Length: 161
Length: 259
Image (cartoon, rainbow over all chains, first blue to last red; front, side, top):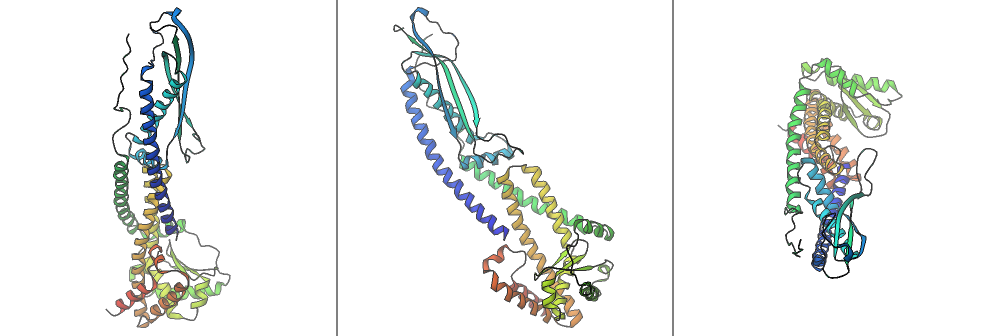
């Protein structure tokens, strides 16, 4: 009898994973479309990791901190596949898109904050895990989500350089 | 330094591998490995168990199993023990050197079982109903004796022991995957136990034939079980149970007795 209920729960999990895959793929594709569209908009706002760039300090109108953050979560299908990959090792392909989206979204939001600036310098990125990351016996049962914070200094010139 | 705006279409940070394909490949790999190791470990467990000397078998058996709360009527248990000895006398020579003990357990369940250490448990529910049906009771005891002769209790223990250890080592504490594996192993165990039950049935039929000349006790018992089961379980549940359906068991015994 236990086996019967186990099989029922297995079928239930399978249905959840299939739904998660379908819905998750749609959400991811929409998000990527939005990201690509906005990246093209901000193409003319240079963002560099340099601490100093060649500029005439008397020409600087404004220099301020700008930052963008994004929190993205995985779906059940990704969690299942990452569990399988964890057994044999190798690239966890499902988490790659998660981090990529979060990173690009964070940078875009930072650029939105600095929309009227001329250049963003000293770009830095920070990652953080959100949700239950520590538990008594190391068994993580919760959905993992990651937060990416992108920050830098936005500089606005007085005159066109 | 001049800034030239260039849009990069190609996303270098995401692999082009299809996650669906990867899932199928990995799941298939795990299933194949599970099936192969189940059979390999099954063979290993059987080899270990079959080659144990009698004293070791008794010691290990008594370590693994202790009798639960017994019947409060020791006279009945003693009567059952004497009856068991009569059946033991029908066993092949080398099986008779073990000491078989039957425990009458105070529980109103219609069941009996074979436990490690050549111990047999009979529930009060079954004994009350079959107290005056000597041949049916003989079939039940002979069936459990069949398990003992085939060393089934120890085999089952060593199988599940080995499989649990190996799966813990290989899969670690990833819950969803190891429960998938243990579930499929449970199913394979059930198929194995059903074949083992049929063997015990036929063994018991042989004992009945030697002692009473026919297998009518076995047939009557199967009909009794069939009536009880019809009241409780729908047909498909038999797929998930440890014993084959009573109908099938009865047919097997009838075929065997006609040989």
